[in-house]
Every structure is written in structure tokens, then in C-alpha cells.
Image 1 (tube, helix red, strand yellow):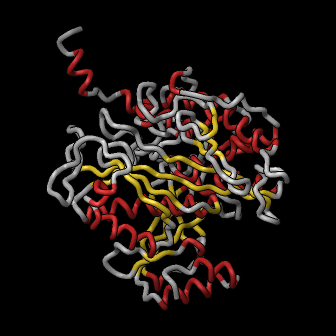
Image 2: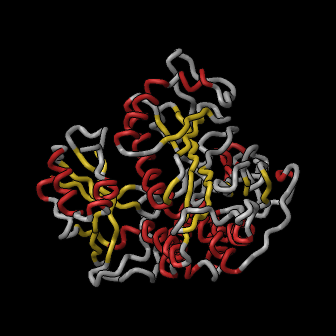
Image 3: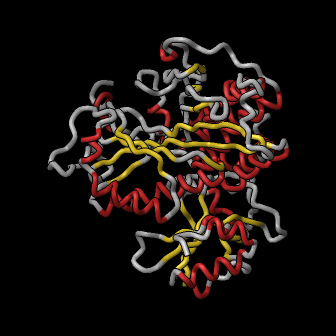
Amino acid sequence: MPNNPQKENKASGKLSVDLRNWLDSNHIEEIEAVIPDMTGIAKGKILPAKKYQEDVGLRLPESIFGQTVNGDYPREWDVLDAEDGDIFLKPDPSTVRSVPFASEPTAVIIHDCYHFDGKPVEVSPRQVLRRVLNLYKKQGWDAVVAPEVEFYLVKPNPDADYPLEPPIGRSGRPESGRQSFSIAAVNEFDPLFEELYDYCETQAIAIETLIHESGVTQMEINLLHGNALELADQIFLFKRGLREVAMRHEIYATFMAAPMEKQPGSAMHLHQSIVDGKDGKNIFSSRNGKESRLFRWHIGGLQKYLPAAMALLAPNVNSYRRLAPDEFGTPINIEWGYDNRTAGLRVPVSNSQARRVENRIAGADVNPYLAIAASLACGYLGMREQIKPKQPIEGDAYSMETTLPHTLREAVNELLDCKALHPILGEKFVRLYSSVKHHEYNIFLNVVSAWEREHLLLNV
């Protein structure tokens, strides 16, 4: 048997039998039954494999989706039941993987969440993405995405009061200066990346390329394009796997949007296209190979609605440091252009079948399920409402007006005000997510920073 039964499960239809056979044949002793929470953190239960029964269902409190990034809960919410009742978890057998960093044979299975009446839990991030993808399927379309995820390697930092520093490479020296696309700078951490590639192969994470980005020890991995839900699963698993590998090499890996001062922020660029569900042809291209009206409308939807969806693309208070106007390489508006990396929406050079738009706005700190759902939702609304985009920009989009929210609170308020997005993402989800993010922002305002102490303590 291979390292995961993804293809076999889909083909056979005997999910319970395939899953049990795979667990037995791989001598699995423990099961990690996980779900992604609002932040994208893996939550769930660990149990002996012999006690795992997928047809019974594990239980968790629904309030797990109301947790903030620091494990707190909003003081006021009216979205979830006051009794904080249970939901039950149903495994998606296509997500079964071995856990390569576990001390004993362990499998991880991503689960979907349901109420006891059989209805999906609307506020579950995985269900939010499914909801958007189902809208496409009703039109006979399938969404195809290809994420590019940036991250930093940093020296272990147990004291949060100290700024992050670059780690020591195999040369014995920390990286100095920016080494964009440098092979030698990547080679400094070859042992780490060789182990990472092994992990990703075991977990069926399709890494296409690895490059050094423009920041000090900032890297980027590109994933092979494919089904949107499967790619979200891969990013979810990749983030955890990279952190584990890095710690084994006495290094931290961080997906913070702006972890280091005076360094570029980390993004999750998202290439997206739509294909016909029957013949697989790219509907962004017409029969003669030219741009279709649907392609233009998709961009129009992104331009109109992405500012209102920013709370999902820039979900943390730190996210907006990356989006500061003076930050090189980070889009500050929703202009679009052909092969123009200064624009928030870039159309790469491609043939007609590969025609796509690259959303460059999302940060690396996103919940991948929610970011992909939000980006596709905006494009969907553009196609449904036949929104014409502005003219493509030529030249430097950084010199143009900033049109994106500047803070998390502003972004959440725009999401609440955008009624068109609510039924697409789910009314209950929007209300709960907004409550969580408002609470996080209020907690952040209670923190006094080093900058305030330095410049205000004795001067005001």
C-alpha cells in the first residue's frame, strides 16, 4: 500500500474497508483526528487506532470554532448555542496520511463536522470552502488553484520580548543581506529541506519548487495546481510539518505575515482558474483562445469584493504590517495587470488552457480554507453579477492609491457591511468570524509595545 490511500479510497467506494485495511497494513498505532479551527490550527483528538471507528464519530464542542488565536473566546456572541453542545466528526478518507514526525506509527485524518441531525456545521472552515465550491459545481464548473506560500526560518525565540533573528546555517554564519533566488542561501539549510521533502512525499504534499525569497532566510514553496479543497488540505498539513522539521533542526519556521522589522512580509499568492466540470477546459478562455467574458467578470468580482473579504486574507493584527504602503513587494490595492507584480491581481503569461489570475494580496498567516474560499467567492460574484473590471494597469501600481483596509477592525467592519458575501460564505460563519476577530483586535489594543515605551515614555 502507498503512504496514504487517497486514490484507492476514491476509486473503490468502500471507504470503511479501505481505511481499516490501510491502518492495519501500515501498522498504525495512533490516530490524530483533526479539524482546522478558525485560525487554521489543528484541533481534535488522539486515540489508539484499534479504538477508532469512523462510522461512530468523535465529538467536540461547537465552541471550538469560537476560539481566538490565543485560545480566548469573545465576551459577547449570539451565533453558537448557549449550551455549547457537541458536534460530531466524520473522517474524509481521502485525507489519510502517515505522520512522519511521530514517535510511533501514527496517521492523521482530517475530519468534517456535522450536527446530530446530519447537517454540516456551517461555521467550520472546511465547510465554508465546500460551500463556495458547491456554488461553482452548480454552474458545472470546478475551481483550480495553485498556492505559493512564503515563510521565514528564524533562530529559536523563547522570549517574545526580543525581536526575531536569522538562524545559523551550515556555514556557521547567519545570513546577511537579502539573497533573492540564491541557491547557495537555500543550500545553507539543505539538511532541513531534504527532511522536509521526505515529509511532504510521505504526506502527499505536492511541492513543485522551493526558492529563496527577498527577505533574510525567507523562503517560498510552490504547490502543484489542483482541486481547491485538496490544496487547502495540503497547506494545512504543510505548515505543521514544516514547523516540526524546523524544530528538529533547532530552528523556528514562521508563517507570520510580517515577523521581522525592515524585512519583506510573507504572502500566500493564490493562482486561480475555473474549468468546465465535463471536459476540463479552462472557461477563462474562449474557443479561439482569447480571454472570455467570464475571465474579465471574475477579475471584476475580485476588484469589487476583495477589500470586503480582507479579514479572511489578512486575518491577524500583524497582517496589516505587511500591507503597509512603504513595504516593497506587497500590493496596496486591487489593480490588475498583465505580468505586473506591483498589482494586487496579476495575470501571468500563459497559454489559453493555463489562463489564470494570481491573487497576491493574501498573507502567509491565513487559514488556507478561508482564504481560498474568500478569493473564489469574490470571483464567483463577479461572474454572477457580470462585473466589468477596470482597465489593466501598466507601470507601477505601488504609486497608486491604497484601497485596502488598514487594520483588522476596519477589515471586519467591511466584511459585516458587505451583504453580498454573507450568503456565499454563510451568514452564521460571517457573524461568528467577525466576533472572534473583533475580540482579537480589542485584546491587541491592551498591549503596550516597545515602540510606545521608547518614543512616548519620556517625551509626551
